[in-house]
Image (cartoon, rainbow over all chains, first blue to last red; front, side, top):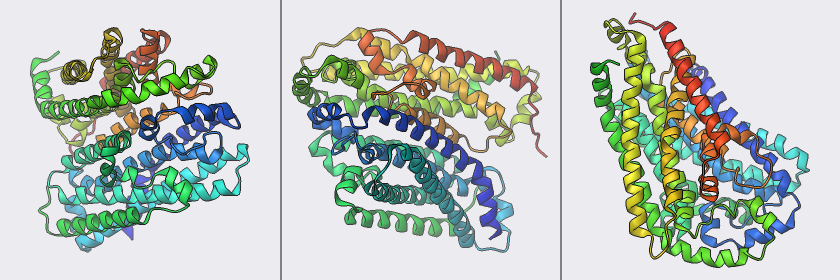
Length: 264
Length: 270
C-alpha cells in the first residue's frame, strides 16, 4: 500500500502534463468543429476523396458535420496519446528504481518482488484510468456547446473504453520492458520504437488493401472508430487479442522480474 | 569549445544517432514505394475535386497538398513522418544534454574539470548538433534516393523537395533547444524519454487538425505548423512569419539555457 501511494504521488506530475496536452488537443479540435457543424457541402467533398487517403487518416465512415463523426476522427489521437503515456508510465515505473539507484532500497523492504510489481502496476493502472476519465470529462465539457444527443454520449463512452483498452495493452508492454530488460536505458528506447513502428504501421495498413493484415500487429487498428460507431461495440476478436497481449506481457513481466539480476 | 568533451559526447551519442538514422531511412523507404499506386487513385479524385467551388477547396487545404504529385505525396506523408521521428530525436538529445550528468551522477566529475560551464554547454550542444546533422544527412540522401527510385514517370518538383529538406535543420534546433531549456527550468529530470515523447508527439498531435477548416490560433505554437509541408509545397516558399517565430523561440531558449546553466545549483553525489 505504501509503495502504491508513493508511486501515485510520484506520477502525478506526469499525469498533469499529459492531461494538459490532451486538453489543448480537445480545445483545438472543438474550435475546428464549429466550422463543420451543419455544413453539408463539406460532406460532398469528403465523400469524393480517394479511399486510400480516407483510410490512411481514418476519416472514412464519418460524417464530420456531426459531433459523433468529429469525435470519431479524434479517436486516433486519443488512442495515440493514451498509448504513449501508458507505455512510458509502464516502463518507467519499474526501470526508474535502477536508474535512480533506489532498487537496493526498495528490494530490501519486506515485500516480495511480485508484490512490488503489483503495487507499481496498480499505481500505473490508476494513472491510465485517470487519464481516460480526464479525456472523457474534457470531451464532454467541449461538446456541451453543440448540444450533444444521447447517441453521442454512448459513442463517446464506447470510444473511452476502447482508449482504455489500448492504454492497457501499452501499459502491459511497458511493464514487461521495464521488468525484463537488463539495461534500464533500453526499456524506454524500445518502448519508443514499438510505439513509432505500430503507429506508422497503422497508417500503412489503411493505405493499401494487401497490407490489411498489418492491422493484427498494431493496437492502434484494433478499435477502428468507424466500426465502433457503426456496430456500437468493440470487436470481439480484437478484444481477445488485446487480452492475450496484456496477459502474456504481465505474466512475462512477473516471471522475468522475479528471477532477474538487478542492475545496481 | 572543448575538444575532449565534444569527442566524448559525440562518441556516446553515435550509436543512438545510427539507430535514429536507420529509423528514418526505413520510414522513407517503406512509404515512398506506395506513391505510384496512390497517385493513380488520387488522379480520379482530383478530377472530382475540380467540380467543387474553389473557396471550399482552399478551406479544406486540398489545393495545397496535391498528393498525386511527387512533392505532394512526399511532403504529405513521408516527410511528415520523418518530422515526427526527428522531433523526438532532437527533443531527446535536448532534454538529456545536461540533465543526464545529474541523474547519472557524473556532474561532479565533469564540473571539477578546468573548463567553464559555458564551454561545457557549447561543446555538448555542438556534439548533439553534429549527431542531428548526421541524421539530417541520412534523411537527405534517403529522400533523394527514394524519390528518384519510386517517382515512376512523374515529374518531380525538386524545388519544393529541397525546401522541405532544408527546413530540417531549423526544425531539429527548435526541439533541441526547447528540450534543453525545459530540462534546466525544472529541478530535476529523472527520465528523458517521456519528456521527449511528450514534446514531440504533443506538438504533432496539436497540429493534426490544423489542415482543417476553421480558425488557426492555438496550433501556431507547434513547429509542425511552422514547417507545414503542405504550405511549403503550395507556395514554394517557407511561411516566413512562422519561421521567424520558430527561430526566435530557439534563440531565446538557447540564451536562457546558457544563463540558467551557468547559475544552476547542481546536486553533487551525497
